Image 1 (cartoon, protein in one colour):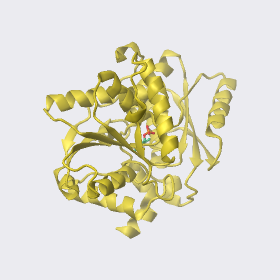
Image 2 (cartoon, protein in one colour):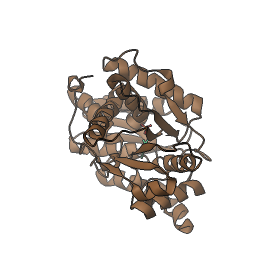
Image 3 (cartoon, rainbow, N blue to C red):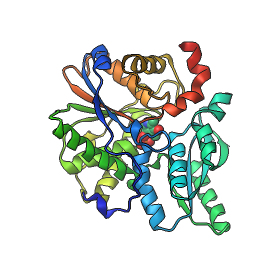
Image 4 (spheres, rainbow, N blue to C red):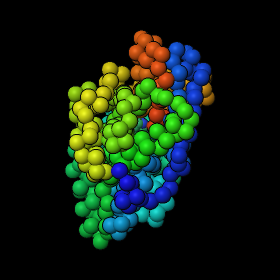
Length: 332
Ligand SMILES: *Cc1c(COP(=O)(O)O)cnc(C)c1O
């Protein structure tokens, strides 16, 4: 895996810190660390920034002038994509799916949406359940009809190009752990559109690192999530010259903590958000990292990580908190 073979635009603040979480770890009875990918530096940061370095690299190499992408209304991916576009003078057109069904004014207008508007993208809203792949194509067509050159970025930036960002994160993490003489027993992340999880799996496989990765799902049921991650990990491994190295058993997703659905907040998520905030001053998000943390907390309390040193990938998303004021504030 020689990532300099792939076009890349450099704008992420890397390496992100690898830090201990002694107070939160003591609550859970494990040696807990955090990989701070909420600190990637682009308009609030988060995990999409690593993917976007490779996606923008390809867009610029192709001479694109307009990025086209999609996400849920409070999408962190959309926010970071618009920021990356602004950084390189590309226009961005986004389609926001009203996936949670919420019409609350904070959900529709604050948080990530406010930042999207600040950075100046063309935004179109569509109802939940819309065929978002078809919407991406239609938007790209309209850009072409106006004489523009679109570059389509799939939801979450999750294709083999975007996943290279998390192949790189896998390498970066292993180098850090080795430099700090820290042997890790488990790597935990939220897993959604699958690019983060798949890139990590492909990266560890290519490097022959056998730290188990556990993904906490935020949307799909376990069989679907594992299939998505596995397929993308296999394709990503091929891309980086590590064909055949990804084992099916290396892909593990626990989807028991989704609750009522994608982007819907329950008491377990609120408890996780408040515990991290009050023990470590760390801000997680209600849709992804907070839901994964809810899973980590529950599994740790059940003894699943007994005696282990665990690293939790902070994928960012705290900007989305402001889209959930009406739900969070009464609970605090
Ligand atoms: C997108 C996102 C994830 C999930 O990453 P995927 O690559 O889509 O699986 C996790 N956390 C946050 C904050 C995100 O925005």
